[in-house]
Length: 140
Image (cartoon, rainbow, N blue to C red; front, side, top):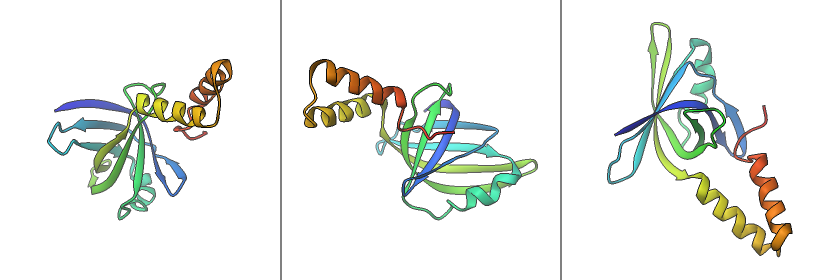
């Protein structure tokens, strides 16, 4: 298994994004045949009501910046497996499936721009503009 530090996370449901404030977090690649991941977040007790709104959701997307906040987020389909109260906060465990990495996003974006008829310098400029805006990251 490989473990990574969560630098930033937000959950997305039906187009609405919710940044999740957390104390600490890990993303664990289980390296199994189903390519599943585990995500564990440690939150302040004051965030329990907010996170419980997602507890029974089955169509959640998590965008996670791994290691550094400036990294492009990896995109996961997630569901909450367990919420555990601790002495000083709560632990939230998610089951996850990796959906999209940056290079896959870039490929899909490029295909979309080409289908719009863009080429040459115009294509390069449009591609660069969209990548810089980082549409997978919510505005703060």
